Amino acid sequence: MKSFSNSKIQRQENEKKEEQFWIQCSTPRWTKCAVFDLPHVVASLQGNPTVTAIAGDMFEFVPLADAVILKACNWIFHDWNDEDCVRILQNCKKAIPPKEEGGKVIIIEMVMKLENEEDGSIHDETTETQLLLDVQMMAPVPGKERSEAEWKSIFIAAGFSGYSFSSILGLRSIIQIFY
Image (tube, rainbow, N blue to C red; front, side, top):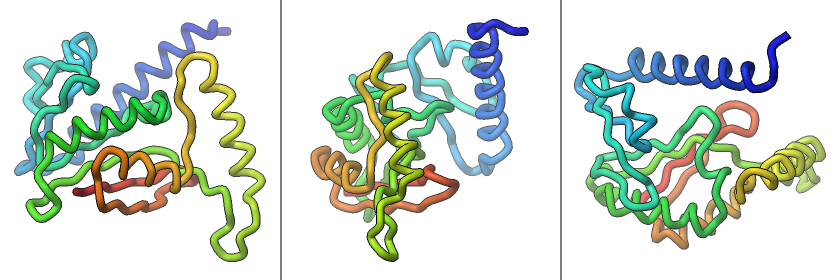
């Protein structure tokens, strides 16, 4: 039987391999792709012909791009409180052109659906999932899972004027935001 720490490390290694595979296999040749993360994270990507590795801190700056995709193996925004999310998105906004020039931020995160769109009833399973995830998040980080309304508040506070939500699998969604 593996210990918890060994299983966690193995899971992280598998997720990293999966994400690198996805980037390599799904990037058209005309697309320039860069991975932006903390220096110790991108160190192993130096010299990779598929992607450019850029070391930095999203709380300080985000490199210039036509589009910024925010997706990690274990999410990004659910780790942070609303104020930190706004700060990250403000840096993303500085990095992209306006919508008319093709600029956008793409976020892959959970969007909690608390009400049934058809009859307004409460989604018991979704609410239970959100509460369990929020309790799990309370110990290590100040983040939380957010509903569509909570996401919209963050986008507006960060200076974005347009957004769309596309549910892709369960609670996971692709969110696009523009200014």
